[in-house]
Image 1: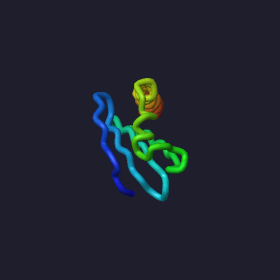
Image 2 (image 1 turned 60 degrees about the horizontal axis):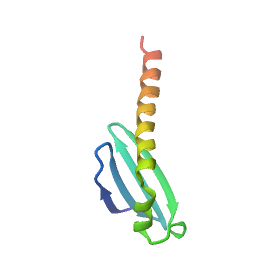
Image 3 (image 1 turned 45 degrees about the vertical axis):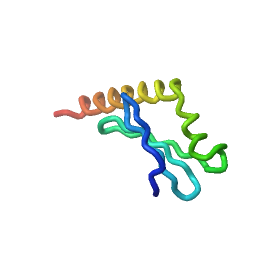
Image 4 (image 1 turned 180 degrees about the horizontal axis):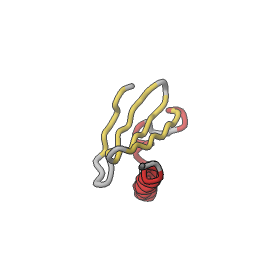
Length: 82
């Protein structure tokens, strides 16, 4: 796996990788990760096409999903505390 780019964002770390003719978009916030895979053939303009997919609407939704992930994990943790 080869790192193609790291994009600055105030709410999460964004890294784009290339592996086996796929782009992997990895978003990280704290202990949580979201990974999206795309075939290189499905993206026009190479990695610049990936950058275009990462618009504000997508990123806002992904950041909201991190909050949901944290809430779900905390709820599971609470249910299993002795």
